[in-house]
Image (cartoon, rainbow, N blue to C red; front, side, top):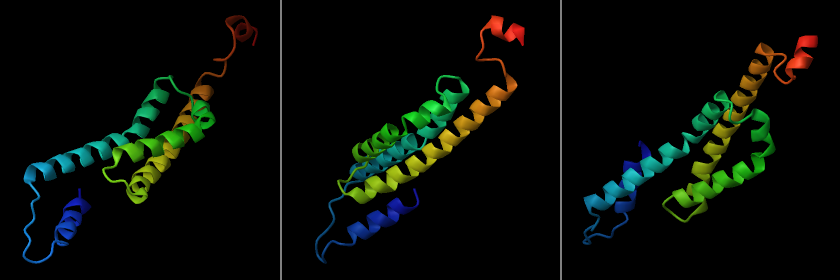
Length: 132
């Protein structure tokens, strides 16, 4: 939101003198909307992961076991979602997503430990728990 107008101003400034820019507002609006939507969705993924953990669907250990594939998936998502073909834009999107995923995994593991403390006999059968 902050850098996009300045970046477009610089790109439009590359036009030689005497040549007018043929950038239409609808094209700019479509580009801006798509970029904001993709980055918004990308950075909501860790929140979704934490919500799945709070609901008991995903465990922190499962996230750790599948971490390499999740990182590859985040980079693939960033490659498909970014508007340009250069690796820098993809990296600028993927690296924060990976860091936020690590934070989500830490929160999930903390929540799992908290849940285990509150229910110490949750993994036992009813007969085993009654014997304790």
